[in-house]
Amino acid sequence: MILSDKRILEEIEKGTIIIEPFKREYLGTNSYDVHLGKHLATYKDRVLDAKLHNEIIGFEIPKEGFILQPNTLYLGVTMEYTETHKHVPFLEGKSSTGRLGIDIHATAGKGDVGFCNTWTLEISCAQPVKIYAGMPIGQLIYFVVEGDIETMYNSKSNAKYNNPTTRPVESMMWKNKF
Image 1 (cartoon, rainbow, N blue to C red):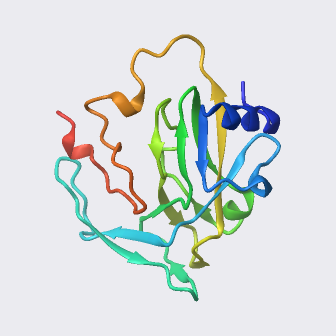
Image 2: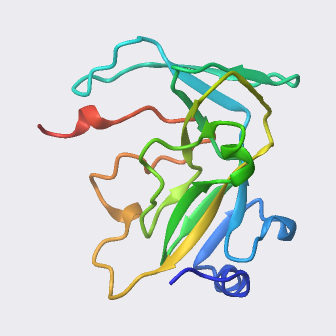
């Protein structure tokens, strides 16, 4: 079950959903719009290795915008910091973003109960497109969880993306044992 706008507001009031900054105008019928932060990053190397720590090069989006290029993976970040203590958050692209040929996540659209951070975006595009810091980039949808949770994400010792940040975070796949 997806939370409605009224239910999202109730959960914010209870403190089980936190969105900072929160602006009522960005609350949709059953989602909340998030915006592109000013920081982007690309990987230093063109060939990535899942067993190695692949370094990223970060930069700020200029006020006049930045042109994304096809065949390049950009890591972006939401302006909004979120906490979800009772529901499963999903990040999806906005239809207006998709209609510009922009994908905001390759596979990582689902958060975990207990996720407390900004969202790193895995941005790619179908053709060159100019983007701007602060533009609407996606929407958060909240799902109800059935059953009790044994360990929240923010209390897992092996959680790789727990350090609060306002910058994109590179893959931590290299921390896995395989």
